[in-house]
View: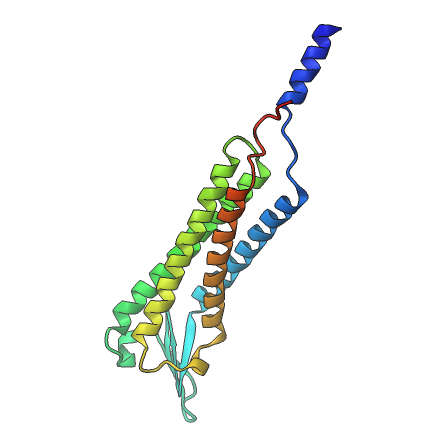
Length: 197
């Protein structure tokens, strides 16, 4: 009887404690918000039309002009916009923006894996995922800043399109989720360690 009781006690000691509901809810909310930011950033980068200045539409991939006689006319050759350094600068802006999306995908994947497959390294995976989201914020902010600097003479607050504000919102969400995730990880206790009696 005593040996069976000792085995039962050892099994109870090795059982992992359940996480509090609030912690689980916050982590799931961070994952959902990060996924939303990823979708917003992906759509914004793919569309790429970020600034409307009079009869010209500037984007990451195209430059469009419109008139009453000919209608909209879009060109992939950004040098025809007659803005110094626009063609080269846009290559940098869209490359950094696309890289931000890729890094965010990797970060989001680590966040989800850390919650689905709980093991001794779950908290480390969560922390690395949050760091990748922070890197994605830096990259997407760099893309936004590059775009604004290149077209500074054409920039007006009401000229920014919905796609530009989607990227701006996504960049902010990357930062908010990364900082929140790191903070949650720092104030909570490891749930994968055996419970001590």
